[in-house]
Length: 325
Image (cartoon, rainbow, N blue to C red; front, side):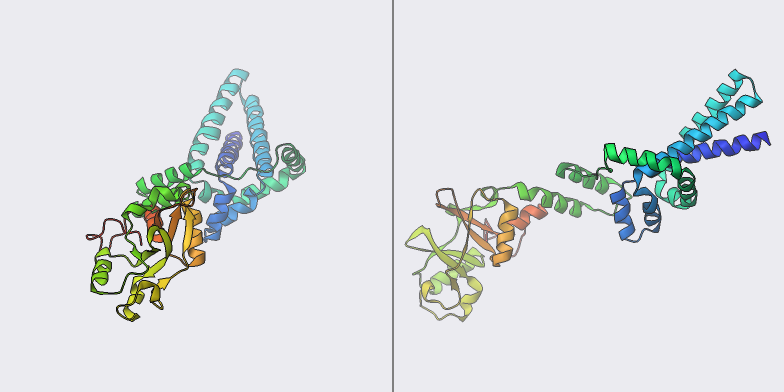
């Protein structure tokens, strides 16, 4: 009978110890996300894990009570030295090390399977645990949410991509990294400098020579100027040229030439510029410096290439060095 009682106490000690490490190592935000996506075990554990201070107090009270009882009980069966060595060995090996090592690896599964035990422990310890947990909450506050810096998130994604147990592949890793980095980049870093921009004077006639140059450019949108290439007056939409009359000037076209265009600063952040493009439904923007001088153009494609960390190639890229429009 004495051995049976000792075995029960050791098992209880291991259970309290393992659950303390296992359940409290689970982040409430992670559990909530798992529960939202249909993880029944996470949803089960979340009901008790949400009040972390009460759970911590309950499990520690139970662990201390069981270990103390075990030491006293073994002391009644053997001499002081033998009882001390035996109790220490049983508690450290079977009440701490082994259960914590096992349960910490399968915390969600084990925590869900033993949730009935945890709830019973909370009810039994409630009169003592509740006041203590309220004191902890008062002085320490609620648990702080777990947040990560962008570099940490990128490192987590890389670790997942490297793991054979993760569904994240190299393409997803590259795109996520790009999405986290592009908002810190400036327009000047990805724009096409005005020296490399193909543009036309608004008085240019729609003749065979003009169409040949447009076709060779491979661009769907072209900046248009008046007299001085730095004096941008609008954007030419190449696809709309098909409905225009021949031998008229660009400025005389009805649909192809749009005097409305988006202007952004060279110092602007890419995420801000992308938002402006989406709101105004503009795929290209004229870039100006702090002195409002025309310095280049930037397209939505330029920004997307930074996000996906890969150049977007099409059938005309072998003919054009910079696909800015």
